[in-house]
Amino acid sequence: MLGKALLVTLLARALGASAGVSLRTGLYLAQAGEFGFVLLALATQQRLLPASLQSPVLASMVLSMLATPFLVMASNRIVMRLSANDWLMQSVALTGIARRSLNTEAHVIIAGYGRSGQNLARLLEAEHIAYLALDLDPDRVRQAAAAGQSVVFGDAARLQSLVAAGLARASAVVITHHDLPAALKILRLVQDHSPAVPVIVRTLDDAGLEQLQAAGATAVVPEAVEGSLMLASHALALVGVPMPRVMRIVQAQRDARYSLLRGYFHGADDDTSNELAQARLLSITLPLQAACIGQTLGNQELPALGVTVVSLRRASGTLVSCESPMVLHNGDTLVLSGLLEALALAETRLLRRG
Image (cartoon, rainbow, N blue to C red; front, top):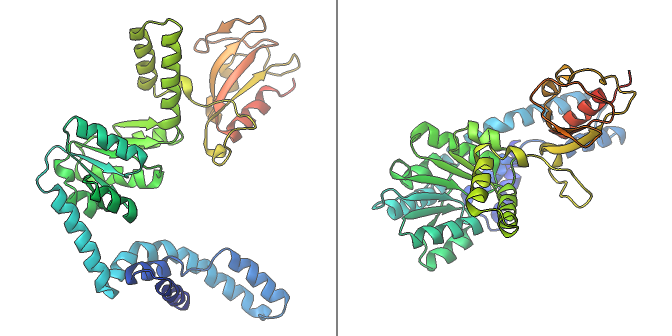
C-alpha cells in the first residue's frame, strides 16, 4: 500500500496536480483493486506466483480494502501534516469564504452553482435577497466571480466551509447538485450545528425522497416530478380547469409527497441507468386459475414485500377503492408500485395457481 500510494502520488504530481491533491489521490488509491483478483489468479495459473503465496496475498488484498475507509477518513489530517502548502491553500479558501459572508445576515447558502444554482441566484438578486454560493468547479467560480456574482470556491459538505459561509446567520441552505451522499452529509452538518436553518434539496427524481426528509430536509424538490406537475398544471388550465383548482391539485400532490406520481410504467426508451433503485408501476390482471381469487386483498400481504396497491379495476372497468377490505375476482387488474425485485415477488404471489 505504501509503495502504491507513493507511485500514484508521484504520477499525479507529474501530471500537474498540487502536492495536497497528489497525496490525497495516492492515499485514496493505495488499496488493492478488484482487477487485482484477476491478476492474482492469472499469476498463479502461469506459475509467476507460488501457490503457497496465493492465500497470503489474497488476504493482504482484502485487508487493504478494509483499511481504505479509515485511511480516507484520516487523509485530511495526514495531508495537513505532510503538506504545508495544502494547509495554506485550504486556509486561504476558508478565509475567502468568510470574507464574502462577513457582513451578510439572513442570506441563502447555495450548495452547487450549476444551472439551477445560478437561476436561483438570479431570482434572489431580483428580490434583493443576499446569497453566497459554494462550488467546486474552479473555472465556473472564476467566471461567475469575475461577473460580480457572489460565488466562492468551497465544499459545502465540509463543516468548515459552511461555518465560514455564515451558516449560523443564514436564512436557508439550498442544495442544488445531484449528489445524494453529499446532500445527506450537508443535512447532517446543518442538523448538528444549526438545526433552525431550513434546508431545501433538489434531486433528479423521487428515489431518495424519504431518506432526505428523514435526514432533516425541510423540502425536497424532485426535478422530474416537479416538471411533470408543471406540465400537468398547464394542461389542466388549458382544458378549462379553474386556476385555483389547478393550484390546489398541485399543492395537494406536494403535501402528499407526490404519492400519485410515484413510480411509472417503464418502456424501451426509458433511462435504465438507475432503474433498480427507482420505484416503478406494474399492472397485473388476475386469471381464473390464480390462488388469490376469492381471497381478500389484505390476505396477500403485499405491503410486507414493499409493494403498494395504487388502484384496482374490476373486469367491468369499475375502479374500486383499495382502502376497504375487498375480495379479488377473476379479471381484476391491480396496479402495483414498488422496486423491481419487490414487484417480481408480488407478481409471483398473485399469479400463483390454486
